[in-house]
Length: 307
Ligand SMILES: Nc1nc2c(ncn2[C@@H]2O[C@H](COP(=O)(O)OP(=O)(O)OP(=O)(O)O)[C@@H](O)[C@H]2O)c(=O)[nH]1
Ligand SMILES: [Mg+2]
Ligand SMILES: [Zn+2]
Image 1 (cartoon, rainbow, N blue to C red):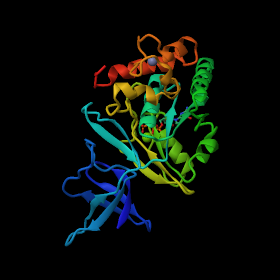
Image 2 (cartoon, rainbow, N blue to C red; image 1 turned 180 degrees about the vertical axis):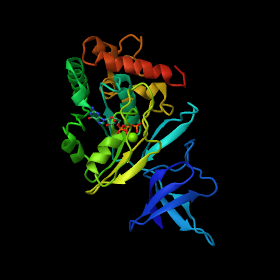
Image 3 (cartoon, helix red, strand yellow; image 1 turned 30 degrees about the vertical axis):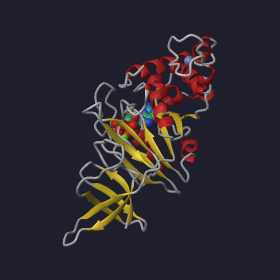
């Protein structure tokens, strides 16, 4: 029997079959999944086969179907290990905030690189705009034009003031959407708002220094009131970049990708090579300096230093 994975805690999985029946399933034995060294073999969004174990009550996962795509993040315990956040996504929304907490453009750029590398279309949504004062409003306009210029959709929202929610909700129809972002940006609050009968615990406001009381600990998928599903995730600090070779990083910066054939050397890393079209574009403000800084920073953190 086929089923979709709705929640994974690492030791058991919440799954739902085609007729909407839910089961708590376990994995027996070891799963080998080509080319992926991951701490969790099965993720939310995976399509699996399940079976009832003979003589036992429990349901086991016997097979995992090929994935269309998946998103990983660095394991919190070991930076050399992947943790698959979710699989088979149609799109991914990064919920960002410029206040309580602050999302940096560096973090947004890592998210965008991961989205490009994993072929998951990305949307940026800035939440908590009710908290933005002049400084944050200016910053928002700058960031918005920076990302729109290179083709990423940018939305603004306030869950508290009920602004922009319908627009973002409208993006979710007929799709499986991953919702990610730092802890405390309002991911669970957003889902509670658009699926009112389903109340996930959200963090209590207690200052932004410490961890919230009801921070989400496992990714979980929810059926929307219309056709479509959304995946709530625990707040993340970093996206994994391990699969990316230094040579290919610029392919995941759209505005750089468009120029790399104009560089003098076909193995140009766009750092200090002569005749680099990317650097010229940065100097002429055709590529934003912020984005270029993110490129250099990410390049510096990619393990495989072959260059
Ligand atoms: N001012 C303001 N506060 C908001 C808004 N949206 C959410 N919050 C508050 O932000 C806090 C964190 O919200 P959550 O929904 O728990 O955040 P989360 O992204 O799920 O966090 P994690 O589960 O830790 O990843 C809660 O106290 C919310 O009430 C908003 O639009 N404006
Ligand atoms: Mg949450
Ligand atoms: Zn170059």
